[in-house]
Length: 290
Image 1: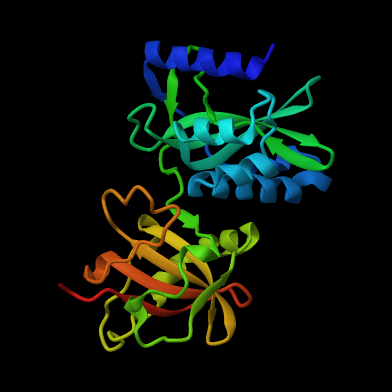
Image 2: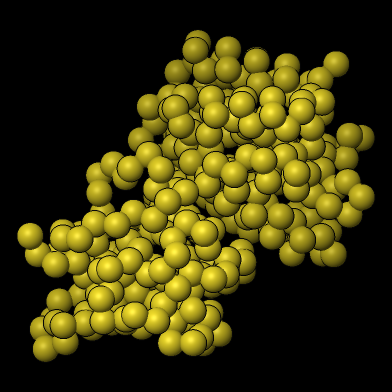
């Protein structure tokens, strides 16, 4: 019997019957529960799988990470995923389940279409297993109610991540917002460690002067509240991560797979470059005023 399918069915049934609650647990490095030799491998695999999920590249999810306990063909898997896309997943904890040798990864998730209208996402879970030296994951994430059958909202202050790494082919060049820069073009895909370092240093954006407004006190406040798209580019002949950020209440449905370009909008849209080698930001700009 496929207990995972049963679990999804039971959890979905619980969703329709149970009231919601707030989860008090805070996120940590979930890989700390794993053996030392597998921690980095696990972090990279989980991060890459989530990136592929949110970008809608389900064929690659199937090829690289899907455990396929259901025995689905790739065509059937991709068709199934169109009905429930993971928009974001922030891991909170990892629990080992013997003798199946599975890891139960609990986290904060957002789905499309939304399974419940929880403002900050819902607590869900995926299963992970090391098979022939490679991490494989279940899909899609299942809702994980508590012992009383209640659907849990994500911990206070923890939001499903507002960023995505776009594939190089999503944009041939840096958009026309940066007319002064003719030499930037998409050419590589940042890895999970580089994106994690960028995110860890994101608050430094608020310290930068904005191009064209150097003589003013104008700054980007709370850059983490913007939706952010990351693209690996060659900028002035060097590797950089291009940041495309916007503060829309509701981003376009395809923002996790296609570069979102808006010409005006002032402080609601900012752009810049991140150097993964020096871990520094540069060339901060904002959109023109309408």
